[in-house]
Length: 590
Image 1 (cartoon, rainbow, N blue to C red):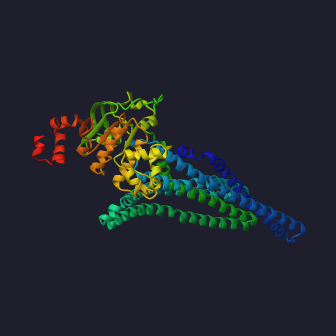
Image 2: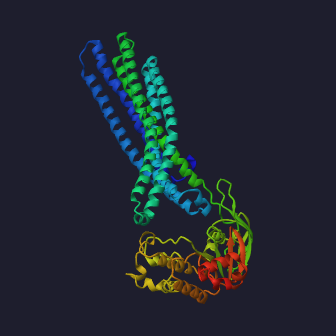
Image 3: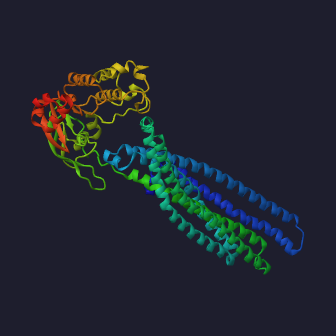
């Protein structure tokens, strides 16, 4: 997990390595200051013990030690400031790289991978989780080396001054360390749950903001507020449980520190009375005791941050380690010859946790290049799933799908998906102008190409009426245009790819029947060689197709022309009666 995350340090590696080095210098300076102080106090103590006044030589020695202490203090301050600067740059750069790496990895995911993670969870991981890991990383490179170095060398100096007393520090440090580990392990499960509740919180917020118009129209503001409050309360509850445990750490540490100081002063005072310890030695021991216990406190603090961020680390490592279920083959084919499509005994199941029933069952059919095929069926008959197998948005569970005479798994993914343009059931536009959205289909499309694509999709008539026309800002998610307008722009965007296969997944449902017919007529006229697959709920959207595929619970019920299906297929005839004839006598006669 740690190795996976640390790959994102990259160009900030030198800063990340230099930070602990600088912090060691700071620790060394702080270790030396108490020792020099004992030497300074020793000069005064020796003169007092000898019963003589301080001489000029003594004053020179005191000034000398004072200058050394001042120099050590300046070096310590400079090292600490430099360490802070380097740590900030390294941690911020690490977080930026980690955020980019995680985002880049998500872009490689197949639909199956995306289904594994919820959108809200991915957003939480890219924001809250990375911030938590950034803080832990900064604490580690600053304190996780400095604190042990200070602890070790302060302990050595303590034993050098008075070995028979220094053992007190080690006992106190051992007790502190054990308590910190126990508290950290107790809090970690709550932190893990807290991050999951953050996912839920973001999901509620995202769902509400995306559907705010529906919420307003149904006057369910209060319901949504209660739902968000409940999600917030869950985050609060787990956060408080974890923080209560971690909050108990500092009082415990302080109690042990003060207890250690009391024991040290008691034992040291007795030793001074017994003449086995000098007052300068006790002063040095007190300074080193503070440094030793401060080192333990720093370690405790770092371990606290690690405990808080470990669930976030696991979640980020999960994203970075996730391998796409759909990959390019070793020797991919880059040329898609034509739009011929063959399904050969295809079955497919959404596998989650290794289990899942087939939603497409043993489907076989052939579509010639340039044909117009309609697909119709009841809700849940797997129409969208079926066409998703053509551009390898999912891979078949059994059988094969061929495009242009080759199995889709043999193609380079980019080449295949450029040859198969798909307008998804849920129309998505992005922030930016009309032209910017259309150029998703072809990055270097000219103005003439944009206008021609819009004309084919019957989008030109409303685009020309927009303020700024093709430079009109659509707003986030295309909120500034209607559902039908959004569908037509998505169709125009797909046509700009000049695909060999065009899939329209219920992409004219928000368009009136007249405009729908005009779009289909334009496609027949201007894209005769393109294989066109039209999924629709309306009979009149598919009845003039070359052939119509009727799906029923993931199986092919029938495949033929409109006239053939009206006569021979009960499902198609039922849909036809309900929509076209209204189920009356004319329909029965037909």
